Length: 117
Image 1 (cartoon, rainbow, N blue to C red):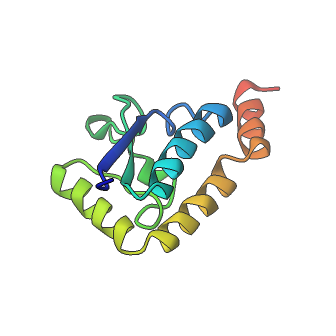
Image 2 (image 1 turned 45 degrees about the horizontal axis):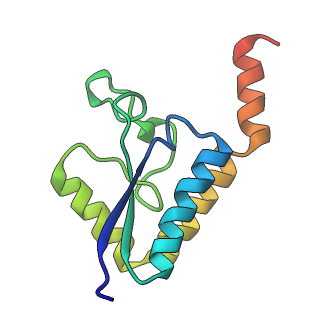
């Protein structure tokens, strides 16, 4: 079988629900293990990818290693190339970002703080 260049589309950043985020990443990981060139693309039109309102996730999350923001096609291609050139490093960085910012304890504490409880 000839390897394919594939994109897994999702809304993980704006809807970081554990089950859905896990499912999308498992789809991407499974396709990668089958030998395909796989990338995850966020498809939301709201936060965090709203450059007009300056609400980019780069102001909240570390970017450039494991997590990339983009506004242009050239920036998307640069992120693909960076990830492909050192997949292990970017994979490790993405896991570290997820562990720090999307742990249930962190998200729940922020939710309770914001709700005033």
